[in-house]
Length: 273
Ligand code: DGL
Image (tube, rainbow, N blue to C red):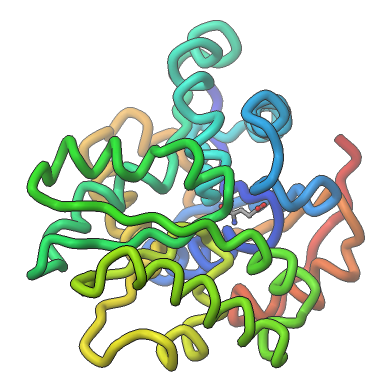
């Protein structure tokens, strides 16, 4: 197996919030980011469609030499990761690995709640997959999980409308729907990598003292741990501190919007899949 960069994938820009944290604590590695903006959002698409889109992108990462790909997208992690890990990897790329964002989060979420009641905000696809309640039950059986789909949030963010009164309306509405399920929820997970951009607005609509968790830092810390536990794979990850961005849609748009998610300028290349 050849050496290469670590691949980071999202349907669009959201994964940049994860890459931002990963590069902050692991700047020494090379990374390539792919946003499948042309087919985003994934959140409202069927299992089959998300699986096929994600697999196609994962195969592209492997063709670039990536020994490890991180699906920095909850929808892809919920709907495609298991099948890729269990059915595809052995035939398309034995020895390479694909990781998601759900497992690192569910492993620790129970440590943040005192009431043992947590709320999950995600896309319709992530919520319908039930991945969070199923996985949290394995690590924290005493924790009750409440979920709320927020189907408008990703389109609002992707269209640069996340600071508008329209966004406020949908944020207030969906948070209200979550908190109506239990007034004791004290920890809310932003189970979509786009949502950290809404953090300031979200804080206005949750009770004081509520913990709101974003996944970037959690996934980054978990990657540090994973690379330490898998030295063979780690040795295949190139270390020149190089960052390359690709998008299946307009590179100009990606650079413009992507900088907001990444917190720094980005320069992308258009990719025809
Ligand atoms: N950012 C993605 C997630 O974490 C998905 C957004 C979408 O394409 O719907 O779920």
